[in-house]
Image 1: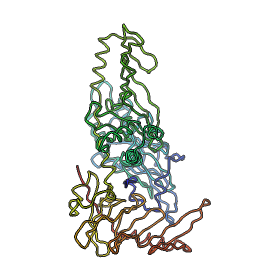
Image 2: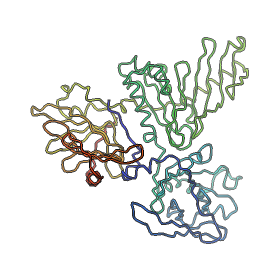
Image 3: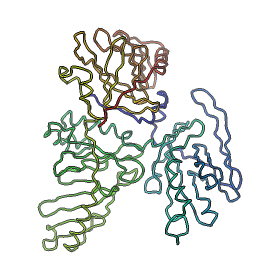
Length: 555
């Protein structure tokens, strides 16, 4: 079965050769920002080497008043630049200290109140959001290869006259405009800021979803599922359902309130366990990480929009519910409260409560019922998307005789699959992708596709599949060739004599010492070549090709 291998669509604007920078793990360097001072602050963007070309040094000035507050509506650091909307000109102060920019309500500060509206935090350390007052809003890809998290900081206490029940109008308006400020952040110099980068589930967990597709497709048993860190219930679903991809779903939600979406694998069967969560994933140092597994007798559900509800059963005389939160950038789960019926411990008074899942305190039946009713009312119904949107359709196993036209193929596609019509060396073909993404230049792009044509008798024929190496290299067409590429290869695909063929491929391979060997394959023959001139030439052709614009199938 052809599986998706989608990388962050937001990174599609980064050249292929530079993608290694964008995929770097959390860096160890900390952003050094200028400190506030009672005079004009200067931030230098030092000379940098980018693609072999030296950039000129530039000096950026932030004007500060005598108290050290920046009075400009454009605030610049060595990493980013933020702009206060024109309508709020002369209504804000700002400070740049260490790893953050703080923006204040000028009128409140002048009146003697703190007046903090929001902060922009920057750090290469993912722990900045763990339990703090920041939520992630994007990432800066610095010219030195370091990735900096960018977070929105919130005030931890009232910033105006605490005797007043409501915030002043000026403060409220500034607060309402905060999101637009973050949306319009730009990188300083050659640094690149990408709004919402590193926060969206579809960019963070695609390899996890592929693993579930593999588990179901290959019929993993319970032991294999547990070895691979997924719920053994998946094995039962695959074995006992004709269409397992339709009763198993996934959902994204920021359940630990750090601005980064978490992944939930859940039940869509419509049975009594509909909505149950089989597995939960979050990110730890930007890596998709398993948090907890649920089973039939140890179930999990989303709770209150910020936590997990664990419903467990220890037999006919014991059952209960415990509310857990899981911490940002961590696999740690913390008990908030819980209640259980446990006649094994005390048959006459079997009702208990806890705040740590270790010490259980007796309670009355009346209080127990009231609390359990309240907890039940806080269950959150996640909107699961069926796994059919991930698994796609394996056309190599389809009976193609049931498709009389390209239109009938398109009509059979699952939501989020995509299609396009192109011409390869005078042969009209249909491309069908398992998924697509906005590559930020007006195209709905894709990196994998099944390819179809009509034969001389007008029958629909499945020719095979093509695959690029990531979203930095979407499928593209040039001079009648369908081009696929990755960090180390470029292939020209076409149709000849009713077959899909790789007409020419140039690629490089590395030995254990990092030495490269270059190859070219053409007309089925593989030849070693002296250098990467042909490979770089094909990369240049790829850069000039037209990205295939797919049409996404909607629900």
